[in-house]
Length: 405
Ligand SMILES: *Cc1c(COP(=O)(O)O)cnc(C)c1O
Image (tube, rainbow, N blue to C red; front, top):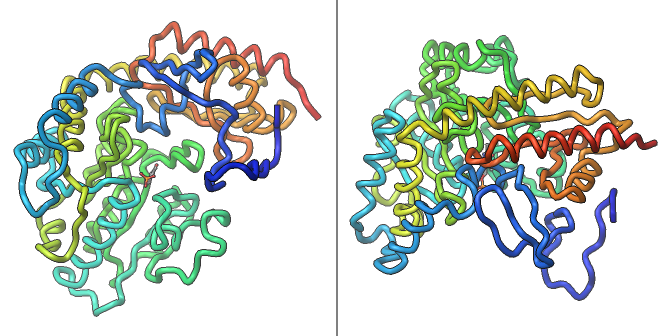
């Protein structure tokens, strides 16, 4: 098994090499489990980076998709369809927001939030033309478009892709004083992840988001929170912002909103902010299409009961206890978790995050490293306690039995 380095793709393959996946080829999935082409079953503890919060092929979501496939799949926004308003209204009610602007991918939702913030800044706040600034945090992950990587601090994500979009100021994540110092009269928005997912499930001090809220109020700037990975039940609340009682002006959603079936994203928030996007100023051919709305409506229905959020809280408390025990035993360098979402830092004596991922794969557990020594755990919120405990027993055993270097 390859354990390190980026293997050159075989010359016979026509697939672009912009990923370095674990060496597994999946064929089917059901709930928390997937099966590879050879018939081996694996427990999925990544859940599509939280795109699969409700597991693989959740029956309610599959039913909604099938019914819609048999009825109407695409209209473009040139015409309305009979689920568009229903989707917007129901999502707005779930999140207690004024407006919903549907897009497809997460990066598009972030781009939409940036455009709305800038236009609001010029038309409502009165920032001089082309002077708008947006304050962001280092270690951020907001997607892969040229504008979004313009304010990434990950060298791999940026190098070779300039010239970059100006107008962004990067401050250390979790540092309220640095945030305060970066905001001025040109600032239209502060854009933050409430917890940095790709960064390794980095949880800021509890006062950070509330302080950002207060600073934005003080300076007439928008608080834009990217909940594409943290939102929709993952942290034990519908939004991670709810954990600290913060109401952002705009929220970006994606990943789990598409139920693991189709890409669905949205920007939700204040009417006077999203209202600056009038006909002709912004759009998407596929945004809010009937199939997307059917699936996303079914996702909203799953979240309305609060059942998945409660599961994430209960199982999350158990996950945190068990990870703390591994840290106490000296088997993990450190661990952070909130709800069913954890970042574990692998002590180098146990190898790299990649090596741990490969060892867990050999034990039929799928996870993926993020940033060298860190492995993210994000099981479906529908995982059973037994499956979670089995995976944690295997993790414990792998760590106890491997010492490298
Ligand atoms: C995944 C992610 C994105 C980008 O979503 P895509 O659908 O891959 O474009 C943006 N922000 C956060 C926080 C994410 O986790």
